[in-house]
Image (cartoon, rainbow, N blue to C red; front, side, top):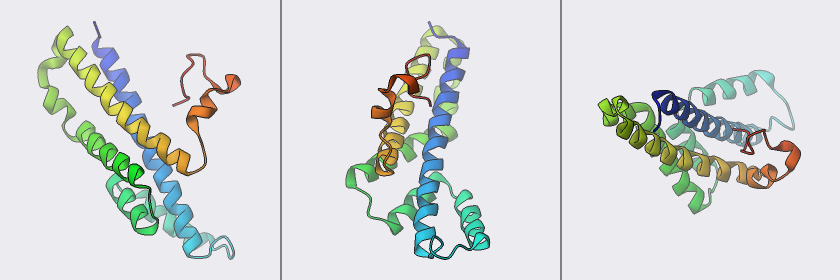
Length: 156
């Protein structure tokens, strides 16, 4: 049966997946805004820094909305991002309130762990889709032997 350490470990992995998604969306938005303002043709480090700091203060929902306003996201990616946002918000704002005392029993921790696995899968699907849009196929990358970590999993 899962231990409380197992639950906490999966919580950490799930939060990491959420942050990777936020970081990649922020990077995409920085690129789009930099292109809009001509910063590749005429670099302006001060303006680029202003844009970066503004983007860095965005929540996941704000990043999704801002990117959607600047680009035409594929419909399946838009729905994956909205699902990821919903699950990420539930994870950070109500996961423990929903599960309450389940942490104190084997059966309860198993339920918590299954819920975390589901949230993780939702976030990872969205992250992989965003990375693919950026030109990085994490699934293909993971099949290259020398890039796979000792556990055989993606390096996230």
